[in-house]
Picture 1 (cartoon, rainbow, N blue to C red):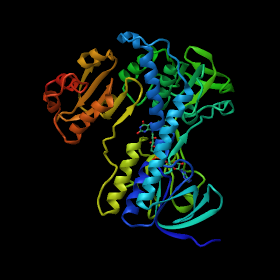
Picture 2 (cartoon, protein in one colour):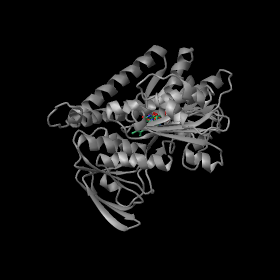
Picture 3 (cartoon, rainbow, N blue to C red):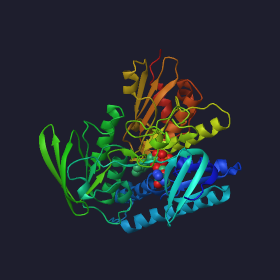
Picture 4 (tube, rainbow, N blue to C red):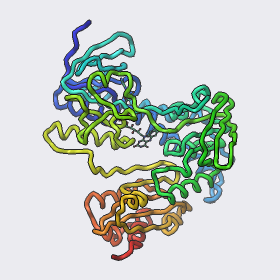
Length: 462
Ligand SMILES: Cc1cc2nc3c(=O)[nH]c(=O)nc-3n(C[C@H](O)[C@H](O)[C@H](O)COP(=O)(O)OP(=O)(O)OC[C@H]3O[C@@H](n4cnc5c(N)ncnc54)[C@H](O)[C@@H]3O)c2cc1C
C-alpha cells in the first residue's frame, strides 16, 4: 500500500460550491486537491443549467422565426438542424471547461480526474481516469457529490434505455414523438424546447397538476402556456409499464382516473427527480451519516456527522440550484474564517426557463396558508404591464404576498423576463423594505419591472 499524500483540504466533486471553496483555499496558500470523475466544473456547465439554457435559447429562436409573420417579418419555412444546435452547445461547454481549467491553474488547486472513495476517516483513494490509484490524506474533507437522474422502478422502463436530460441535450436528431415522464422544471423546460424544435411532445405526470410545489394558479397557467404551443399534458397518470426501445418505438401504459391508456412515442425522457451520488463510496463507513433519501446529514453550518467533513450542494440536501451550492460555499468559507453563517432562513430565488419563464422567491400562497400566516395577496395579469403589449407576450401574471408588517414575503411571476424582475423584488426583500417602496418607486417605462408599481398598488390597505 502506497503512503498517502498529505493535503490541507480535499474536495470530492467539482460542483459549484466545491470548486469555489477549493479555489479560495488554494489562493490562501493551502494545499488543496479536487477529485472529479467526469465533469470539470460540475453538472451546471456540462450537463445541466447552461447546456439546457443554451438549447432552450435555440428553441426560442426557432419559435420566434416560426412566428415571424405575426410581427410583420417574412422569414419563409423554418427547419431546425439539431446537429448545429448540439454543436453550438458543445462549443459553449468546451469554452466553460477551458475557463475552469484556467481557474485551477491560476489558483493552484490541483484537479485530479478519477473516481474517489473514502477508505478511512480523512483518507481518500482515487481510481484515476487514466489508470492507476492515488491515496490522499487530508485535514479537511468537503463532499460536493451532486445527484443523478432517478429512473423510477416502473416495469420495463429501464429496458427502454430512456433518455435523461444528459442524453436529451446531446440529441442531434429530432424525436418524432417525445414522451416526457415528469412535470417538474427539468421535464417542462425540455418538453417546450423539443416542441419548439418540431417534435410532438407528451408530458406525463402522476400528480393532479404540474409543478406541485407551486400554487395552483401557477400550475394552471404553465399548463395553458404549454398546451397553447401544442405540448400534450397528461395528469393524474400513473405509469404502469413501458415497452419498446427509446430512439425507436416506446409504448407507455398509464392508469388515469378515467381508466388505462396507452401512449405511443418514439423516444422517452425521464425527468422524475434526483438521486444523490452518495452510495457505495465509503461515506457511512467513515462516519458520514446519510438521511433516508440518501443525502448527507448536515447541520445548518453544513457540517456532517464526521469531524472535519462538510457537505455542499445537492448531496447535502440543499435546494437543487447552482446558486444554492454557491451559497453553501460561502457558509463554509465564512465559518472556517471564524464567522457564524448558517443555511437557516436563506432567501432562495429560482427560475424555470420555459417561455415565458416562471420565477419565484419567498413564500407561495399555499405555504403561507398552510402555516396559518396572515398575508395579503396581490395579483396582476401580465397583459396589464404595457411592455407586454409591445412584444405580444401577454401570458402570465405577477403575484405578491405581503405580511402584516408590510414586508414582502413572497413573489411569483410567470412572464417575460420574470427572473430579472424577481431580482428587483429580492433586493427589496433583502433590504427589508416595505412593499410601498416598490409601489411608489419611479420605474422606467416601458419595462417589465414597471409592473411592480401596479402589482403592489393592488395590495389591500390595512
Ligand atoms: C437539466 C437540468 C437543468 C438545470 N438547470 C438549472 C438552472 O437553470 N439553474 C439552477 O440554479 N440549477 C439548475 N439545475 C440544478 C443544478 O445544475 C445543480 O443544483 C447544480 O449544478 C449544483 O450541483 P452541486 O454543486 O450539488 O453538484 P454537481 O455540480 O452535480 O457536482 C457534483 C460533481 O461530483 C462529481 N462526483 C460525484 N461523485 C464523485 C466521486 N465519487 N468521485 C469523483 N467525482 C465525483 C460529479 O461527477 C459531479 O461533477 C439543473 C439541473 C438539471 C438536471
